Length: 333
Image (cartoon, rainbow, N blue to C red; front, side):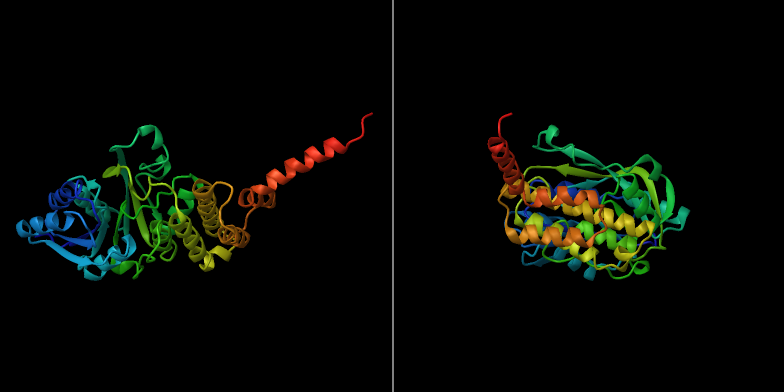
């Protein structure tokens, strides 16, 4: 048996139609030293039965059931159980290529890396492809097949507009990169976890390979495709709040600027989610948090007006009304 042990952590919640395909992809890896840790996050469908059926046939599968607490807690529970040197996260409605682990381990050896990033194939299952243009799986060409320090990779990814935050699109050495955990109880947890992993281990060595090893399913009613709600907005705002606590966010450096740019992008997405969820009538507390957080980033002054008008869209209506009044009161020549 190969001594390089890899832990594949799979959070499971009501994914009965997809779970067998996911588990089969993990079991069928062409690397022989793998433990599969499935965390049943309080499923109410047949997911638990499917897990039990697989465990009876495969002794490298560990199952732990917890009450429903969300993806972050499920992954953190998996991290507590994992005994492998390498960690790979796999979402239970997706699947990986048979050679995913072996390809990454080869890259670890060849480049003496702490993290191996790869790309994904995006496929649509019950979702119109025209609605899926925002889903990206491939990293920018200048990043592919190159080695970087973790911080340099973050800087270049932001600069190229190719920062893919998904925690499922890399394998990392857990003992080399500290004990970073997922923020519990929020959505968009990958935005925070991946960014912290890179920036709190800024000198860690990493390689970005070009292989598309992950198969990401875009389906109805997933976190990414469901209608935006308060929980989406709150998750993005928490990500911004936590990243602003990093000392790097205050630095006048390339990495500090890249981090501020990412935080601003996160807040802009939150602002758009507010519009989708509430139209022009989104709650005052959300507006206030957005403005306060934007103010803590180093944004250009010319953006202030557009940010304020976006957070308080009724000001546009007032502005238009004032123009009409002034036109009506203007004396004829």
